[in-house]
Length: 145
Image: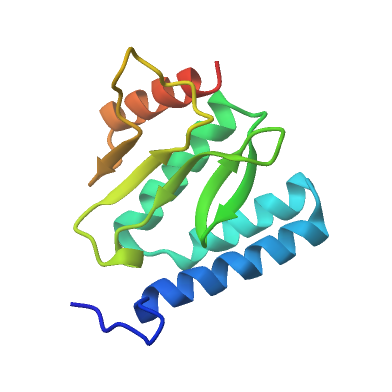
């Protein structure tokens, strides 16, 4: 179990909060500059290793092809892609970041994945395969439709 700090957050959680505050300051300075966002996402992907890196590269390629209007930007240090208002639509949560057994591709509430009264918004991913690429492409396409 992760050790808690005096504020009730683990060291990893405190680091994530600090990372997010740093991102928000950098994003404020950059505005909606696509190049600055792209650089931050590519830098975040470059810091990843193994399967997490392969998954992040795959998601980046899919979003670039299927939803080119989404703007790359980091989200708590993770690769993410935002709509015109700057709100995250889809992101990759690497397994290693949270010591999980799989990475997660998540969709925020701006994603138009609605399907009745219940639908999934996060998907566990262990490998980037042609089937995964197709499914993620379909999800991203639907999310921005």
